[in-house]
Amino acid sequence: MEIVSPMSGSVWKIEVCEGNTVSIGDVLIILESMKMEIPIEATVTGVVKEIKVAEGDFVQEQEVVILLGN
Image 1 (tube, rainbow, N blue to C red):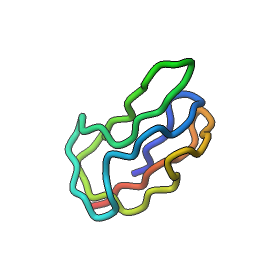
Image 2: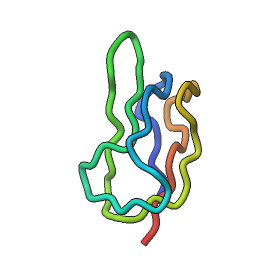
Image 3: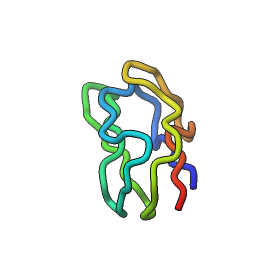
Image 4: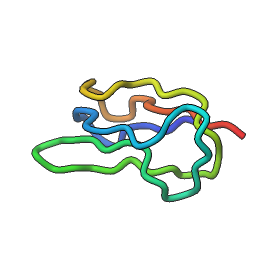
């Protein structure tokens, strides 16, 4: 399952590590855009397989930021 950024912005904080189990609604990443903090939440329950960004990276809208698996 791919988790994508809902908008363009900077990765302010990554709240999970690879291998963590997450549930629907858990905050995975916090973006900063237009001086606002935008949480990216898990849309499914699963295990964080890969974090594709680092804190400070700039991401585009719909860019894959995390991969979740079973």
